[in-house]
Length: 194
Image (cartoon, rainbow, N blue to C red; front, side, top):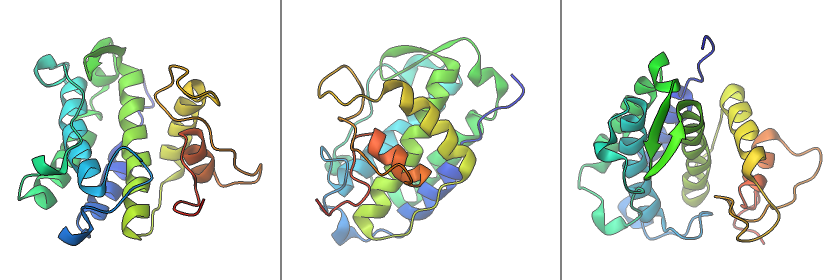
């Protein structure tokens, strides 16, 4: 594999967003309806460890899905979670991460699929966090293209159709690539407006 997807820009954007979150925001709702902001941050911390381990084919940390519970946030999450995100991006710069089979959340996956899941988690949850905190969100074109290609294969209009995403939220034909991605994941790009 010669053209590896670089998770660095998406991981860096998410790390920057985390640095600007105040404690009083942790109970805020997010577009990821199952999680408050604090829950989602905990989820990001867990998935960072799990997908770093998946890249290294270290299955000791990949047997369970990442948590999503604000009560589990360590006091130093503003420094440790960005470091985890940096390590995640670095782990997926190794061509071996994209080869063979690996595991994430207890599910066996081909390396390229796991890498694309990790990228999608970074971009979409980065958007979730930006929306929940009123911060601007920027995603580089390569990250967006990788996510759109990946999500397009699994998105569905039907609820509970086995997709990891909610039912597609329709967006205008001329929507931005980011809004198209967000709609495919079952989120309203205009959140919180309904």
